[in-house]
Structures are given as structure tokens and as C-alpha cells.
Image 1 (cartoon, rainbow, N blue to C red):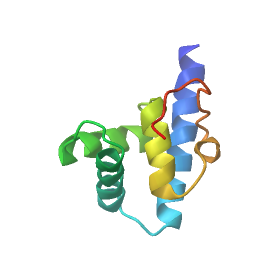
Image 2 (tube, rainbow, N blue to C red):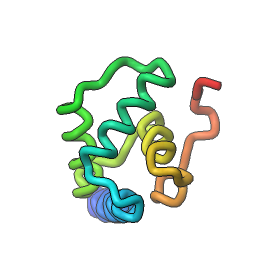
Image 3 (tube, rainbow, N blue to C red):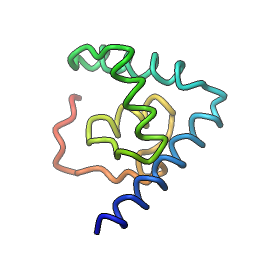
Image 4 (cartoon, helix red, strand yellow):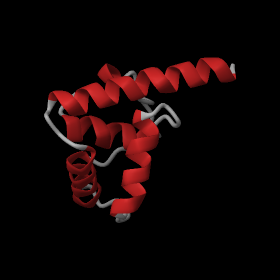
Length: 96
């Protein structure tokens, strides 16, 4: 089970990194866009350093983004969450 989760996290990380690079973005650019979207949707402000660590952990296969982060990440990258290997919970309460 743990090996499956680790393999999935690495796969998701690779997809996130590839999507970011296709846009020609650095992790810094993704960080700024992610935080802009947090503010736009009224989520608690997140520090640059906090998001920097999150992005690094995601791309290096150490963590898988939570539901909110999946949506924000996909919006930031201009892709569907599923294309990053990140299915969404249909019951997730997302602001309209």
C-alpha cells in the first residue's frame, strides 16, 4: 500500500513538473500564480515559503496535493486536474 502511494506520488509529481515546464514556468512563477488564485478565491493567504515547499514536495513525489490544491494547481497551469493524475472529489465544496 505504501509503495503504491509512493509510486503514485512520483507519477503525479512528474506530471506536475512537465505541465509547469510546458508553460515555460519556473517553480517561482507557479508559486506566484498559485498564491494569486488563493487570494482570488478568498482562501487564507499562504506565504511564498509555504507554497515553495508544497510545490517542491509535489514535484518530487513526496506529497500529493489535497482537493483544494488540486483545483488551484490545475487552474494555475491551465489544465484539468485529471491530466495531472489528480481526480477530484465531486462533493468537494468549491466556491462558485
